[in-house]
Amino acid sequence: MSSGFRAPKGISEYVPPRADLLYAIRQAFAERARLAGYGYLELAVFEDTQLFRRGVGESTDVVSKEMYTFEDRGGRSLTLRPEFTAGVLRAVLEHGLPGRGLPVKVWTTGPAFRAERPQQGRYRQFYQLDLEAIGGEDPRLDAETIAIAWNWYRDLGLRQVRLLLNSLGCKECRPAYRARLQEFLRSLDLDEATRARIDLNPLRVLDDKRPQVQAQLTDAPLMADHLCAGCKAHHDRVRELLAALGIAWEDEPRLVRGLDYYTRTTYEFDHPLLGAQSGIGGGGRYDGLSEDIGGPPLPGIGFGLGLDRTILALEAEGTPFTAPPACQVFGVALGETAERVLFAAIDELRGAGIAADASFGGKRLKGAMKDADRSGAAYAVIVGERDLAAGSVQLKDLASGDQVAVPLTDLTTTLKERLSR
Ligand code: HAM
Image (tube, rainbow, N blue to C red):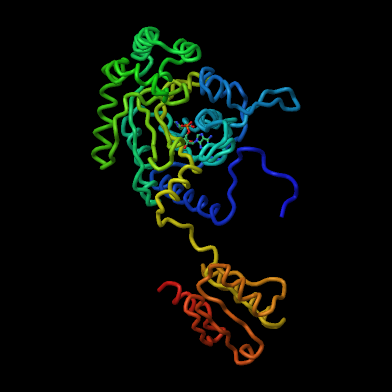
């Protein structure tokens, strides 16, 4: 079946049952965020283009090549959000949240847009969970945010997630390191495009995956060896706190993130079964971002977790995490009076917290029972005129095929009891 239209290229869409899984993992995250005191935000999907240019940075691939930018009818340049952090900070400032006390702890979720070359795990519309703690320099915030993501992965049953950790220094120590790195990189045999990067964004060269580049980088100076005393103490403290929480990480001194705002703590969650798109989440500090977008000094830390890749990781590991059942009880009515009675009974079941559905369109027994099987329900309630006359309905266990008559008045309690076994 088709309308002739197709979704634009590279868009990640979800329909049941995968969409139910997406919803369930979001809910599990919402619970983790709530338990840690993070409030929910619902924000603009498009923003003033300048926000991303100044926030995410002109030298990044995201801003220079991947933004969906358009002019609105009033001639304003707008961009579909390629990430959340700049918009979260913009909104936190715009709505005066820092006035209610610091740090501002918030989270949000939804689609983000990047005009990338689509492939498995890389889409032009994709979905993130984003959590930020704004207005605090305390290394406990770094560890707390990492722990929220870590615990959520564990809630989902993911066992193979790796946490890669680094520090990118601050405006005190990074410029000197950057100059040193540039000097080193200029002495290498690199192609034109990579040479251009040395001036623009030398740290990104460290991240180059090509073996001929990596081979030349073995002696490259590393930020970890050039941190100022403040950054070193901060980084050591974050690592102590993670260890105290029992979180395992790997120091990755070459880890560089694709967005310009990062300072100090930076990290990625990586999944070894996902091939080229193995980054299932990432985050870090952005102590200068608020000022970059014209706000007051307000350090922050947070992360973005890729929902699409998390689902791929769940599927790759075969974890038992599943969405709650879409249907537990399926009603089949034979005849008009039965339909009326069933309609009310189904409503009562739903009111008691049981996922219940019924056959529609006046199907005969055979067709309706096929619907019941397809629904995935554990039980079918079959209502016939003769049973009704006796005040009862038939309850069929769809796995075993066993069928018993149950008084209509006892239907909800009977099912509640059976489903909780
Ligand atoms: P990011 O690393 O650019 O960070 O994106 C976070 C996650 O989004 C990635 O680890 C990946 O799982 C997912 N992702 C990114 N691009 C795509 C794509 N094209 N298709 C599918 N999934 C994708 C950020 O966006 C930062 N704002 C995170 C952050 C929050 N840092 C501090 N606070």
